[in-house]
Image 1 (cartoon, rainbow, N blue to C red):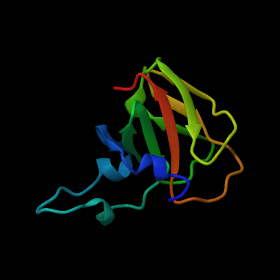
Image 2 (image 1 turned 120 degrees about the vertical axis):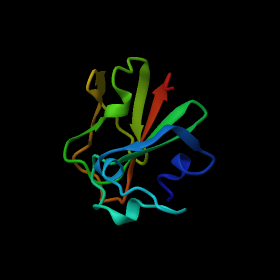
Image 3 (image 1 turned 60 degrees about the vertical axis):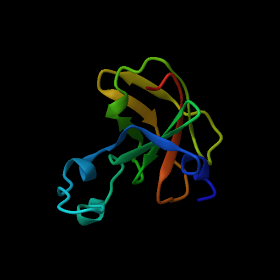
Image 4 (image 1 turned 135 degrees about the vertical axis):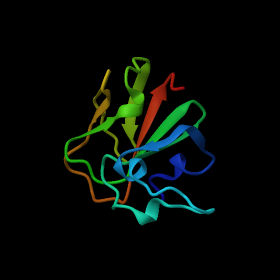
Length: 123
């Protein structure tokens, strides 16, 4: 929580709550409640979004191998910077028609969730 708190406290939902196999294959809700816990375990392809003060937070729900692809950010050429919360060095990225590809650092301690802070004109 200490590392990822800025992506949680005081944030709002983004235009899309998330993407990935867990949400695409989730069972439909029959009554009030949540259904994500009833499906497959999360992977690095499962991403959830929040936003605060013009910043988009992308929460990767599993440990990526070498890169993260965020399909919801395809063709977003106006992204100015990306950082990984709790990690100081620069993060490389590129956006194209397939999505936003973010390089994932090799040597990081295991965490339940990795959060990317994305700045630029995100709408």
